[in-house]
Length: 471
Image 1 (cartoon, helix red, strand yellow):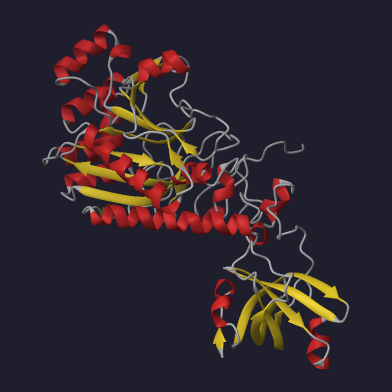
Image 2: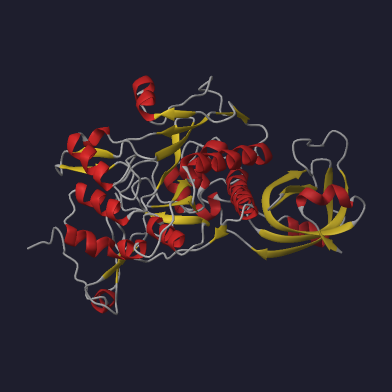
């Protein structure tokens, strides 16, 4: 007897089969008991007739979300009872055997609908139940297909997928680091990567030439509704490249991906326009404009690149110039002398080889051509107000590596979460992440962040300051 998935029962008409899954719904029609059995591919209607008293009595116990195994014969549904909206809608399983694998408490949330009417906090608390609903299953399965498409596309073009460390050195890259105390080296810390920026550039020094990774990034930022402490991006770096080559690669990847995986979506234009930053800001007052003809049409995709960002911006609170993107971005200058001449004259007027990838009013990626001259890199750090000793302490490993022959290189890092949110017409990125945090950075399902034992803290040589302690 074959085990069959819901999507395939139409191919087994007249045959005996076995199905496993969850009880989605139950209906009693007189003496007949109907259930919808849910598996990873859909639902199958199962009918229990009273002729088999023992089986019928067991079926009467069934409740939603019980896990069961059913045997029976696949036949056509009676005329007028078909459901053309689902793959199994013209067939049903006439049960001859039933095994209750596990029972289930009544779920605190309904998992059969799309869940939009349910409060997000309770959905997050019971995320393992929330993920059972078809909408969430589809989001995650399509995300997996997008990841596979990316891997296949880049691998075919001689890119090498390389994992970079998740624990490294804390360096200033624009956001706060998540710090990890070292047990073996008291008082010292690792940091989770804000991005693999330095590692991918070091891979270019290593001669890999074409690297990619679908990677987790971590940033300890202030809470915002549509940001996550951890997120996923497609990380790409290329040697001996140019801005035009990087953008052309991304355009080809995304155009082909949408055409194959989301054929119902319509890309507004080809090629994707490359818009000057100053012009975009003057016209749209935003560096991520929504360029759709119809802003209410979720199936219209208006991809664009924004180029020629300024290299520096003034940080009033810190009274210094900071990199708009990051300090490894190549300014549009001839050499170090030219850089200092332009910086002393007007830092804000120096453009950079920086580019953003935008879609329907969202930034979905950003990148740049990198500095490969160690003297120019040191000058940029110094221009940002870093003391030469601090530069050496925090980035000496990069400067040292660049002294051994580094090729010109550049890359881009499109975000996976936000792109999937747009493709799936979801209101926020939490709907396309399996186990997201809330807008204020909490994991309600695991109850994190949480306190740890005094023994753990002692082992790490850490003491915690107690706030609001009663005297």
